[in-house]
Length: 160
Image (cartoon, rainbow, N blue to C red; front, side, top):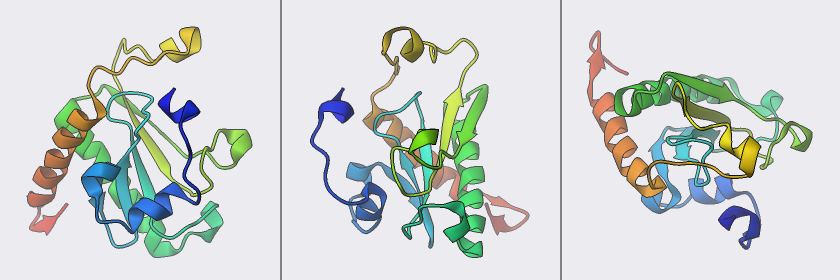
């Protein structure tokens, strides 16, 4: 309800937060050269992340090769971080393109929603209620540390 009833700032949210140096406030977990990983402030499930290009793109065709490569690199990294820190049983990974497809923003981004066997994801369907077992800010701190930990490890002498 905070999102639905709250006052909306003008312009593109992702473009606005990408240029700021307030990662914790904006829930940005990790940044690459062309993309970044941010938590969804109004998640579908605990640990709901989004991988976002820094450059404003409204469709997949506009993405450059290096942006696509980094988007999928951070998608893979994000799933590894979620696996090590939250131990989900699965993931929903998706891109909503256009308002008719459910896109709330006209800036391409990939959703990563951790799922657990028996989770309560049916609640929004039955009662317009979401059950999130942990405050977003607590999950942010946990995932931020997990990103740092995973990035410090090496595989075959190369950073992950």
